[in-house]
Image (cartoon, rainbow, N blue to C red; front, side):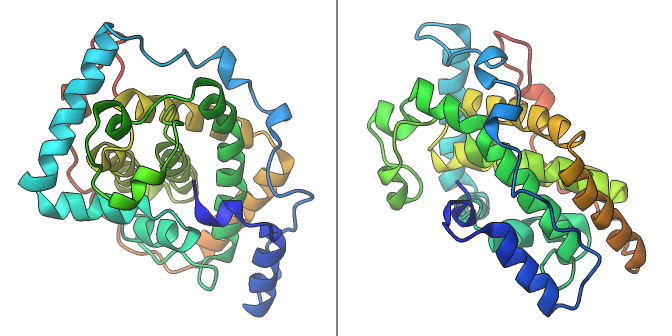
Length: 269
């Protein structure tokens, strides 16, 4: 998933060094870098298996796949955005949300917010990893024998369910909405759009993205009662309050979720 999440270097230690360099002493130092999976709700108990062949949800998956694939030629700008969203490093993630958030998100300018995001998204990753390993669902390009948007994505394994990119983007949107409610609509629209990018790339099914958002919502709910995360979130709130208030950004138009209802579950993707 997020490239920086996979590094062996202690993430919070690296973040702490950046904070010291920035002269910021108001960001707390948590006792851990994330909530371990043993302390999170077991996703195997609340996320159903991938849709079965012949089911209405599987048919919906394929229909959404064809719609998203058509966008690659019909809307080159959307395809370009999907390709950028696929590069999910910390820097790219922060940059991609900055316009919707209304200010630059970076270790230099918003160190407390970045620390809260790292803790929250590292936790979210631990909430979905076992699902990917358990179900090992083939990705659309592998099942259908067609190339994805980005040739390098053919190296991705059979771990399509749920979408880690969608989970991470949605968790980020939820956290950012807590810190700056005035930007909530735009930030949530960006988080939704980033999940849809996985369909445009041809590397996830719509139900993968839907379940990724479900896992993200559960992870953020758990984060909000964790003392370490709450300390980071409170620091981010103080940091935001001390910064000049930018104008509330307008949400970018995205496809109306009401037109994309899963016929089997009645849920939006």
